[in-house]
Image: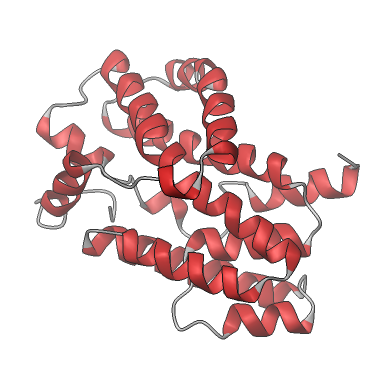
Length: 226
């Protein structure tokens, strides 16, 4: 991976990217409220299970397919997977999360001028843009290797989950960094699984997470939007 592509990847996978990722917990805050997550061990178990049973089975494979579609300039595939991903968000806050961050990243792609006219036209042709769709567009426009981009996306997801735990369990900063370091092998395994799962084997079945998200929508006193 050359230096330019690496620097682009570091920028677009950074928590400092102004798309609002820090304001979402993806159901974790509701798990904290319910007591399912209450210390370092239960926090790590939650993150690992969410990574392997949800993210690696649906969100990451969709992102992988979108990165490939953008690189091939296969606009039909981009539209199809964008529509499927939005339809898979089975609570109002999960749906709002991906659309808000997708919109913000799409706006950033346009304002930074990193995509050619045809690519940008197709990105902006969607009434609603999912976050993986906008991320895949940025990856293709900046000629970042999709396998590296997928690892970075999963790491950024795990980092955000750990930060939620640092703030809300609460965990110490060192404990949070220790947990993030311990997730390396799980992130690599999830990335490999996402690249190799067949379309017919992809699955978004996570009823417990969906119920927690629905409870979170009416949860009194919360820090996060999901």
